[in-house]
Amino acid sequence: MTRRRLERPDAGAVTAELAIGLVAVAAVLVAVLAVGAATVVRVRCTDAARAGARAAAIGQDDAAVRAVAVRVAGGLATASVERQDDGWVQVTVEVPVIGGGPARGLRATSSATAWTEP
Image (tube, rainbow, N blue to C red; front, side, top):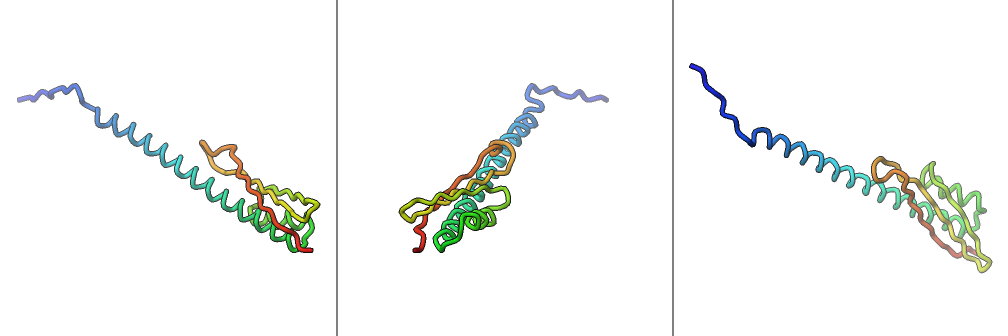
């Protein structure tokens, strides 16, 4: 006695829907991780700019201020110091956001301003 398999028109539909759903979940996960990485880099960049501004406020020279900012932000950071004639100094730090996908090529920039001690 042989049994015939009944052919259904929706055979395999669940597998296809699951595959599409998993791709969508993976894409959302990558986006969330990229935003999280960018946020961490942005906070680190802001901390570095503030540390550099504090160093400038207590009378450190520009090379020392840049060294402080790069140390806090990480080795890939670039820092610039702009001193104004009225005693204010602005430190700007730029750090690349490391990651693939949508985060590739993005850079976080932050600046902090401080009054220099007389």
